[in-house]
Image 1 (cartoon, rainbow, N blue to C red):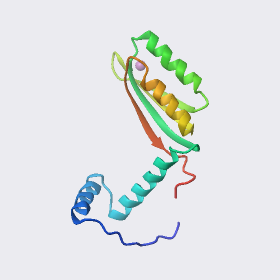
Image 2 (cartoon, helix red, strand yellow; image 1 turned 90 degrees about the vertical axis):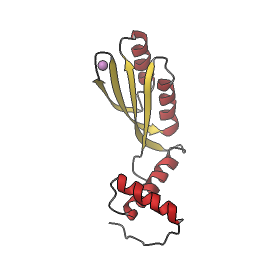
Image 3 (cartoon, rainbow, N blue to C red; image 1 turned 30 degrees about the vertical axis):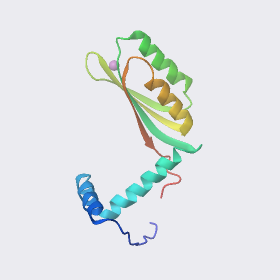
Image 4 (tube, helix red, strand yellow; image 1 turned 60 degrees about the vertical axis):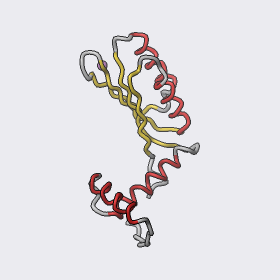
Length: 138
Ligand code: NI
């Protein structure tokens, strides 16, 4: 395990009070864990702005009765098949489907796929989960 370094941080009293409330609500054991996580999140966010490999997920909710819509969504995924590691289809109820697509590749390509799916008429919701391949994250 990497050596830990202690450092002091000065923040306004009320900001720290709010932060303590937030980390308690998010179930962190202490401030250090929460701050480490925030730092890592910043690096992941940064990775998504560069032309390097990232990993993540795209979720979609749609009504499968729209035949044309289903075909368009499948076509878009085939166009970006190099990015897609796996996809899972969940039948939420009689009408609605949830699809979760796991992706790995260049951030800008993933964003292209995300934007195509998101702008496809009839899709109820598309979410993007930004993660990392982990190489740059300690
Ligand atoms: Ni379904």
